Image (cartoon, rainbow, N blue to C red; front, side):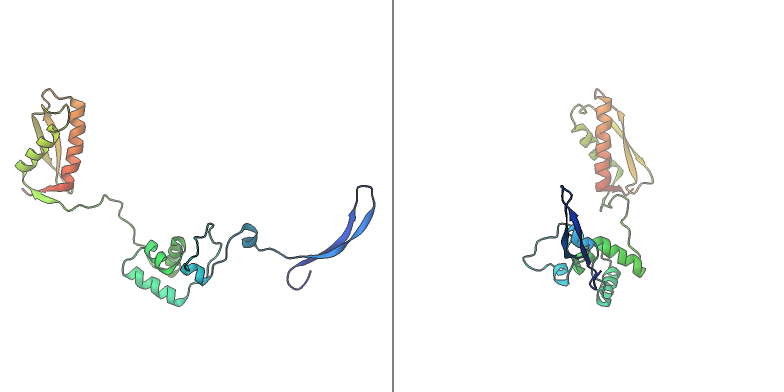
Length: 194
């Protein structure tokens, strides 16, 4: 073993006919895991995305340590409400590294709402809503003869649900499917004001 971590090898080799000869002394260097797997080491210029540089194809094993300036910038951006993806892009870090730094610094992540996106709805009267829903259902094929619908007030954000009450000669299954679609569309557009 030499001082740089390499290993010196020497020995004898045996030929097929049984003769032996001495091998010259050779030196082998240790290879790091990143060199063996072909991972690129990250440099500040590489992290900043120098012009003309292509994207790295493999993930990095380790990145440069976070500087106090980067941590301060991360805290400021998190305070402003920016998410990990936006902060990661700004700092030239991966989103996973940014999330991990959030955790290490004790900064809570703001969770995305799992609820449906809130739409701005317009107020509409009961009679106008009933008229619009009936027209929308009748515009569907095989639902032209729907004669009556019922609007039920409830505790949903839009404040109503809609049901077909008189099918006429319309196909029941098609009319119910149309009503589901129309109800969903009208709930995104309107809320009852009466």
